[in-house]
Length: 595
Image (cartoon, rainbow, N blue to C red):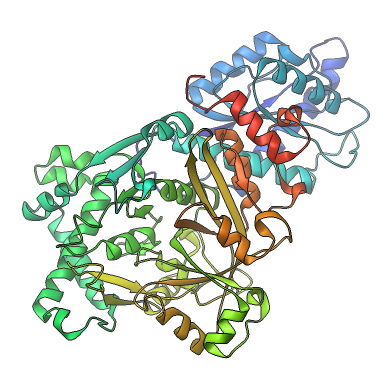
């Protein structure tokens, strides 16, 4: 439960605003207004945690804010406390622009109490007009049902909007100032691995750090890693990571000695990639002060193919273990490592991780299997959620072991959980459900070990992907759906046609009957890249909210319209919600760029 990155955790500021007229009006509202703020703070703190397990902290203004002076006092307090997300609350009319949060750097929302005795909703509307005229996007939270003046309950629809706003706002704040660590560079011409520094800086507020893959070689050869931890890690790996079938033809199979060297090498690679990301104070005691610092990387990518993998073991083991919620040191927060250095898929994984606190699946969006094709090849029909067809999500081995679906939620259903909810038994079950096959030498001449697993449970998931489009900039695509379980014989036939040594997830997107979600084929046909990031849960609405904060338009999603929550002034850019999104993002520009 510790922050492994440099920088304090962002806080949420609660701003109770009030009608400043004294001698009757203000006095009658003081208690109700502050209770509203305290209730909002308690609700947020009781329901949200950061991915590292720390609780979210709310800071409330010292007084109700009735005018410019008190607004300035609140702003000063928030700056000192590290507030990044600002929620203004009120049950009454206030002096719109005088009490507003005028800081262009905070992410803002207003909750206007829907009651008839005092017009909090009227203030909300007036404030939204002021923010729109000043060009400051703000989220509007307005309860559907009228509440009585003494009703201090937060209704469910308001709760949902508060959580959606705060989760996404904190995700934005956590990315700012952190690094994407590119280990190597372009992998096999994949454009996502050609890391775009301007995108990371302008849209995410992140640094891009570049380290050549030879740095891993240097640290292996010069012994720049914790030797005691290495011994522990290797022992744990050989005990818990079951070596699977070697599918290579006899002429390409490695000797027993070579395989042992490969295990030793991939374990060292895992330690070193982690140390490159977040540093390791133990290296300082060994005399490596510079290496001990790391790169403050909240996400990283490893190039691998081909300059590394043509002669060295691939990083499938390293990526899979780092992407999982456990290793030789026990259960811990998952790291985020993009295979083939696909930085755009890495960012998509980062979005999912920050919104759900869970490990993320990295996959090729490989093949669409129609019901007819499955029946032709296997003689069996797809049923249940798979009946309309499935997409084969598979990658060379970097998928998190959490994806085995061996964890269980409070209802006993397969799930992927925040690390602090995972039991030792669940972690062991994930390991037991995974085998490690020798890498196929036609792909990876240097060998290595790929995780052989399948997602063996039906789970709600969301696949997403950032793409960069010339003339537009970044766009986000989203597909909510389900992991599905096929009969063992059907799975084997379909899986063997691709590569049985790689981890497989069978994905059935939710079909709407129109656009890119006309059918499963349309989803596959409209997906904009060869990779996708898959997160536990149906989080499409949260991703849309997050994207709007970053000024990234969404070009493809299957989220129902009533769940979409964007800044209020998006409505000024036309009636169609997707058109609004593109026009608003173009008008306001990237969050950190110079317009």
